[in-house]
Length: 624
Image (cartoon, rainbow, N blue to C red):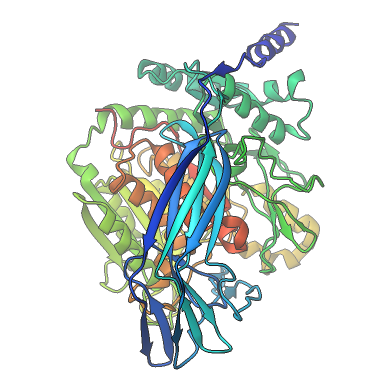
């Protein structure tokens, strides 16, 4: 009876509140004029490429040339109506080429045995590419804890005609946007609970010190159990507990003003059927790799709204298969985070206590100590065979964003990365951030020496207990496949034996899906050091190779996972965003603005799989 009364009280608390009226606004217009310098055509060996010096983005599709583009991003309150986007291009000029433009290669990934996987290339019409000079994309998101509408206009001032070896060049364009602001707000003007923690009741006692600490720093916090949410009568529309939880988070945003959500709990067991402390969502995106037809994505719980402010279900075709992109269908997703969300993948109450103590100690004792200004990076030659050392190049971009930090470069090319002890010893000395980029699985992060396909182990699951950096805890970004695949369990080992017998030992056993927890979460859960937060991929991590636009910048840092990983450091070091969940969200949003995910399956996967393990309200560097 007490449980029933509690559920009814919670349901009443989440009943729709009266909408808050704001003054009606007339239709307004924004006008922007674009001018472009004359294209530069470069021919180098067997490459012919084009560049325009004053553009800020790139149009990139495998199987087509990479073209200079201009990205315009506009931000409005969520609920704004975009009445019209008008783009008027200047009189075009024709430029004759002496050779076909070089087309970009498909992105790559790698399996545990080192086999390279190449993503399929969708057919591209090069008769006129792109078919129109501009495209638009929109999404409902969050910025500075305010719910917003993003409008992106991608203008490409050149069109390529392969059959005639010509370019159509537009020297200027005028962009006009007619819009109407919303007449009412979907969200309260005051915040009841800034942070909602969703965790099973067995973790309640272990979470109380963290809740007290958050409340003491004006982060009003509500703790609720997933089983409570899933038994509430006002979420019967949810088709499973995960969807009911997402609907609850949406209500929390609209009625409590919640802008942060922390999920506490990983896998709780199960052999033939997984069991979870907190619900998860699997996608149904099949990249034709013969490796995975779907994967975990916590972004599902953070993407609450479409561009028009309606619920982002991730099942637009209504067939009960979420985030579907395969031969059977394709769901149209918004994918912009509307909540700053992170997960603590704890598998027992002891781990909750460990991580809670680490968060409290970090936030209250760090205070930008000298050790914090150390930035450790690790990488090598992710794709031996071209002139670039992809992991090291991505490390270098991240370093360029982190002004004021002293970088330690653990690279295979300089001999500083030869074994896990190199990483462990450096982190034990203290650093504010650690960024490794290479290859991985749920138990291993590794890379290659320069132009050599042999392996250098950078950090292994079994190495984690050797961390003794205590409160000198880094925020970690890991580029690699499956390092964040948090559905691992010893139950997977027994499931494999039941289903496949001795055949399980080749190759599924070597997927390493059978440890108690994955590499990314183990980094956090070790008691005497490790990390304070880790961002990693739950699935195959795709990266670009070569330099197919001949701009002397490796494509690995401009597209796919390399761009995704480094955006976190741009958010912190350049944009000065210092709350963990906001820093992570801003990086994801930057990727979505630059590469609309519904246009390319690999872009979609890159964002969906990049997961934050940690407290989204964490003050990076501690409270000041």
